[in-house]
Image 1 (cartoon, rainbow, N blue to C red):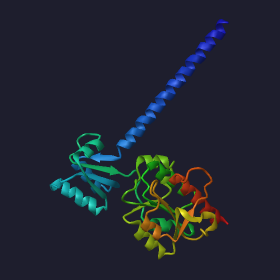
Image 2: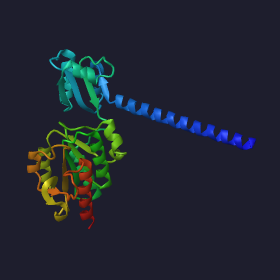
Image 3: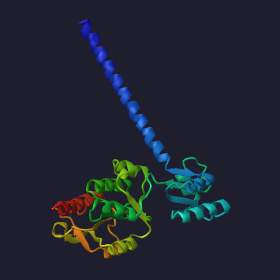
Image 4: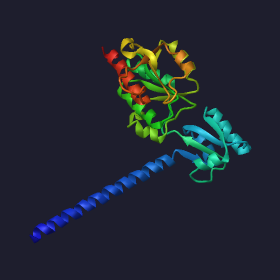
Length: 280
């Protein structure tokens, strides 16, 4: 009996040790995640300027409104040279964004991954000997949705994803995590104007289908060949101008009591109908 009691006590102690270790591991993972998020921002004039000169990929530059002295003017010139999105904000907003509280009027938000060019995406399609299959995202602002869509694009065999510079999330650490590693393999291009890019791609034989509840049922469309799948924002859907540049609008049959799908889910449904048709 005493031996059994000692053995039970030892098992309980082992279980407690394992639970403590698991908690420590989770705590450590949380700290690592927080550190990675912190690394996506650079604060202070010299630090931001050196980041530009070192060629770091900067998604967005926040600048204190009405502040354009010598050092800030130099930073703005570098930002424009790199086609970086610049946003002038009030001091209260900068203070909210700041983690060091020593931002000196400028905060740069770094991309977790380097952006590709649209030409790189087309080159990948040519290398594989396949007609281009692209995702174009019109105003996706939720980083989890963007990451999930990039993951779907990779698994569906798409050659790349194109996102707009404004009113959309960039390649943040959260996006990278949500993509489950797909960002390592799927090029993402960030462009100033989606409509301009669509017109240029049309000249190269790419045609476009967008997700739209008022469109033709996706199963009745011919989705083969060089194609760009356009997915709109979570709330507004595809913008009017982008919709006008699409060749077709595809709707997903819905039998439930609500009238819309999450943007990443809709992207998955449409993407795999394209995959099915490309395989047939």
